[in-house]
Image (cartoon, rainbow, N blue to C red):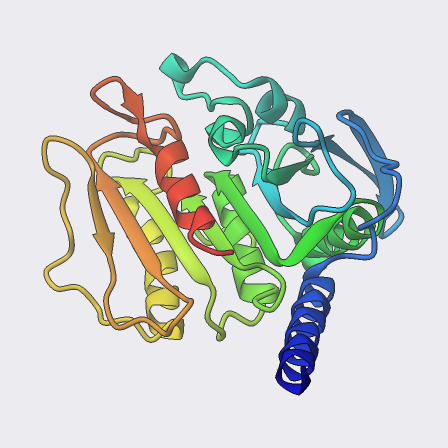
Amino acid sequence: MKQILTLTTALAVLLLGLLNAVAAESSPGCGKTPSLRNQQYTMTVNGKQRQYFIKLPDNYSPTRPYRLIFTYHQLGGSAQKIVNGEDTNRGGALPYYGLPPLSNNSAIFVVPNGLNNGWANQGGEDVTFFDQLVQHVSNELCVDTRLIFSTGFSYGGAMSFALACARPNVVRAVAVLSGAQLSGCQGGTQPVAYYGQHGTADSVLNVSGGRQLRDRFVRNNGCTPVNPEPQPGATSVKTRYQGCKEGYPVTWVIHRGDHNPSERDGNTIFAPGNTWEFFSQFS
């Protein structure tokens, strides 16, 4: 009987520890009736009105902590275009960069709208917008605060890179599609899991800029540089860097295409699958 009680006590302590660990990862919005829906909202940031969309998973449950994924649009784009999707045959992106169908209802998506259709991040105002969104959404919805991600194409990739630099303790991983350093890099010395892709025929942002972004996190993450530089074949080529600090991988995809988030290998647009594969390894 004593052994049974001891075992029961040990299991109870273990269960309590697990519950406490889960609670530590859960945002203040867990357990609340959701006040945010699938629609556009406005908030004030530094005295300016900023817009954003929310997309909840099907059958959202306030007791389940979800991933939180930010999707940033390109220069001249908009949050509405990310929500709707654009003609991928003309360089547009799938809705939410094609991630919701792959996420199996495990993620909440936030789609911010840039000032002047871009992400100049003057004085860090777009990073402040991100900070306020993370706080607001986490307070109103059930978020796993260890699983916050950002992705975007072109200027949206630049903004995701800026977040990796400035908020390494908030952002778990980023996926930068054809980006360059356009939104700044305040900080930029700590590791963040990094996925990047770029085309060698990019006529808007040269591939050298994308490589520079990648190399910052190759260094920060303690990865072993690859030499010679990976080159595309008949299809895109994916390189997973070795020697990275545990939990901070770097993946690089090089292709022969132009400035386009919807490049294909055959009939398959490869950015969504690669991005989700990268993000979903964290749990």
